[in-house]
Length: 319
Ligand code: BDR
Ligand code: CA
Image 1 (cartoon, rainbow, N blue to C red):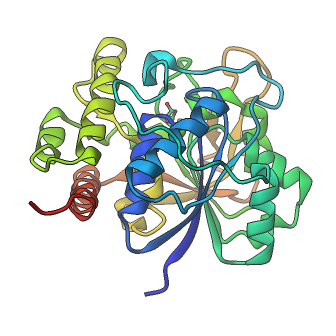
Image 2 (image 1 turned 45 degrees about the vertical axis):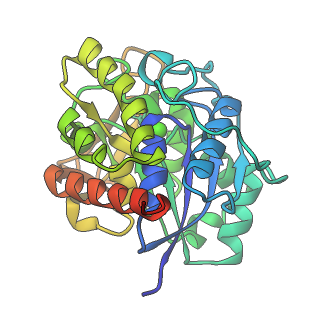
């Protein structure tokens, strides 16, 4: 099997960490690198978290590149109420024992994509600042990248950061505007589908049947995330947005996607960062992306749980 070469651009983040673990647990993909952006926490904290997650999973050979530390125009927005002060909820991660690479994430993304045209799949699961900067710096990446699977936006669904806007897009709507209109082969994974993917306490208890630093990490981080969902959104369990986007790199059948012309509001009013699809082609524009609008949540959750179980087994010596 030829593995899909992927780079995750991330603002780690509890569900980002789960997406990274899912990538490491999935034989269909080769995780080539992590590039870091600000979002759920500062980029510096996100870097530490990414290093800790890779240490936890014995994967410190994977390069990490630090990226842009602020949105293009908007003030920095982080989300300690959602992900905790460290970004990892109640979990503590191993201290980083490897340094990030010297290249800036934007330069690294350009270099990797341009040296392997048609081969690199990007999975941005944070604000799109690094990707937008890379497009402006080297526009040829638009046709050289294989595909780009973005967790972000809310099409028919309401927002999770403003009544209308989703967090990743709201943090840097101008970056999203650049990416949406770039011509890259995009798939959008909005809240419409991710909010159907709810990890429950029972799911976590199932993972805890395996005693392992990995399952303990999932339990400690998601306990905080579940408290947030309960307090702010009356959801029992927690929505794991980012791992769903990652899974689509190798299991696109988990969602029903449609081609649409999607845009984002950058006018600065109450709908700043709102993503919207022109369902009836009123603007006579060709579709600029595939949008996931239906999902088989339990199929995804089973896949997620099985893979985290096998990762935990593979890293835990048999007694
Ligand atoms: C997105 O925002 C963050 O809270 C999550 O990590 C996810 O990428 C969901 O809106
Ligand atoms: Ca994220």
